[in-house]
Image: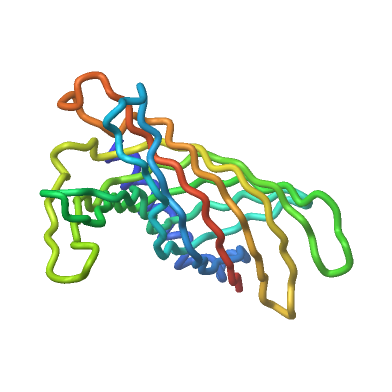
Length: 212
């Protein structure tokens, strides 16, 4: 899995550098991510997870084929969750922070053209490589917190599925886009140390893109 991701990212970076010479559209995407965790089976002592919000972004290359487009991407993808915690009857705010370098292979379909704007729907697989996994605990009243490295407790890679929709337009030579996406983690990211529990990433993201 790691070798596949490295080859994908190397090839995409090469395309990004050569994009203008080959007549392709290359560009940048940036936005925000609301991530959560799906844990099964549900346990009675499981905390009430809240969404972890964070920046996401990266580069893309677009190959247009009429109403269809293929867009490989490299994105920084933050996942995890927040939850409230009590230690010795004192309130704390805790987070699981899982950061991935993620390759996407997105297929877009431009449905119809409405003036200069085109609605699109999209779907495609993602391949993520875990770069950081840690738990962070901060006192709710403020003060110094602490973090714990959790990387050995989670798998080093993840396969997912991305579904979404958005709009695109062109202004002179620039391609502008706004997209809403939902990420389904298909891989159980927990190692065997979790004794049969399945943990999968989920996320909603909004991205703005600029191609040239």
